[in-house]
Length: 137
Image (cartoon, rainbow, N blue to C red; front, side):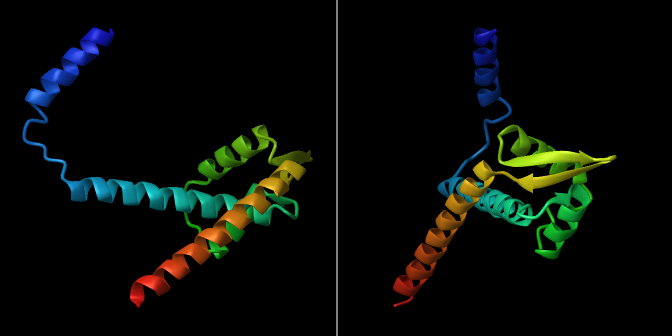
């Protein structure tokens, strides 16, 4: 199988990708988008954990995320529940059923993670601000 994939890669390189040029600018754009995505994920995780300091349903959480300007889950609430499930599996949040409604709340491990993330976010913000000040002089 591995040999067939290598053969396919070689064939694609000489046919389909023959005229494809991946410049340094393209590479920088890809890296920038990846960095922006990581920052967005970081902001989203911090927001979720901050909001879950008080117990909430997924619906309440989605509304409050929207009010913070986080529209990642707009019209895709299933992704929010997937994230909540992953956070629950990792032990960062706890969940309990209240009749037919599931409620989520941050756990002790989640609180520790939130503290680390907010410290990191504050440091990054300070570094960016200092960098802008230095480069503008």
